[in-house]
Length: 167
Image 1 (cartoon, rainbow, N blue to C red):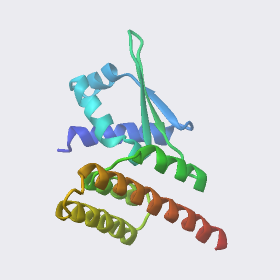
Image 2: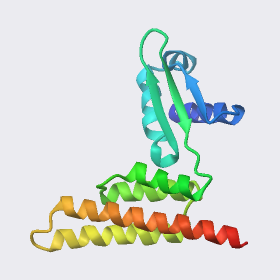
Image 3: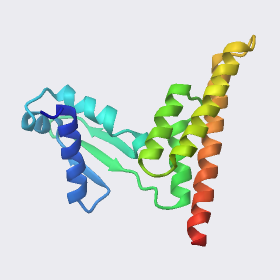
Image 4: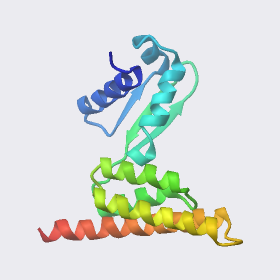
């Protein structure tokens, strides 16, 4: 028997496959009734499976006729990829969050496994140093980590675009 979370995720992905738009609208209550679950299960699926790192933005409209709009973020051009990187990383990121981002980028074929491992190791090294150098604050390590992650991903997006243009 498949996991309910996976079933809901597959259903939402199927809606995207059948839709020509870059967004879909769903009603949380109706979806919960369809899957015979509580509405909070739908929230869990959206928060864990349709994240900005995975290329989605969730918007909700509350009220009697409220809906949830799931937008699939396009990363078709290098500029879109760079904007996406800036948006999801922000000014501070932990080593764990770096791994989440790099895994999502690899799953979306935006970076290779090798590139993912290199970035994760650089992030780990920042964490390693912050734990061993006196007065090296966690906040500084997380800011350095965010800067490193943005720069490395941006460089990969730019060089990837140049590589595909030369082919």
